[in-house]
Length: 291
Image (cartoon, rainbow, N blue to C red; front, side, top):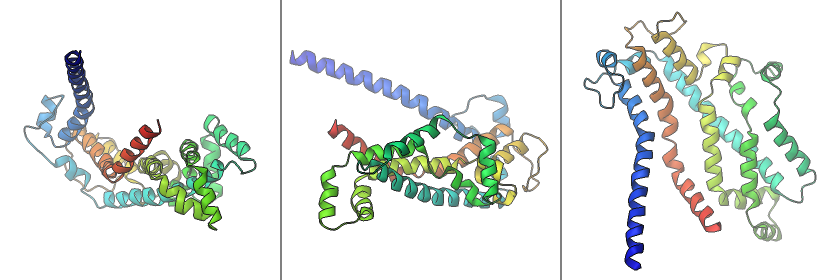
């Protein structure tokens, strides 16, 4: 019986490894294709539909994208709005989530109902635009941050995580004379780093991918984030007549431009994950221990 179980366990492990390898390849191969395609010459792109390792390497697509200093300014706008927006969003979300997680707060059920209500019903694009316009945020970086400063979904996740923290810790802190803000910043937040890291990444990805808000509220091209500028580069490479600050250079094939744009838009936010990985791992361990 022991040998049968051992054999069955080995077969189960082999099947798991095979399935996970297949799933991993399905996930990674498209990304490798995009990266390889961005370094492919026009002749190879014309003859091959799928490239994993370029035969003739070329950086013409990246040279075309970075042929102007405008892209560096757009990158700075995206990095700035992502950092500032994430900090503001996490601060507001943490304050509201902690308040709603306290069972002794009057009216918290009514407030939670209003929060959930916004997930089901929304004012719409035009009312939001009118509000932003009346607040004087048109053509300002605030228009890229404040309208989406808090997410009801992220708020509910963080609020539920705060509720799982033992109340005895808060009561002990109150006995020691700690204020509500002290409890939040000295006890609750340090114990909630896995949730804070996860929600921060959600917000960071949202701000980094800002596109529609920039199209609606930003009229000056000098204030465009990277996503809008990269879209203009793709349109220009496709041969359409659009206004652009790019220098006059011979464009490489549009397909290589599109793939290089995906790499440029994805790589910065992808580099953030390794710094948050330990918190994700810790969060998984906590979940497994609590059952």
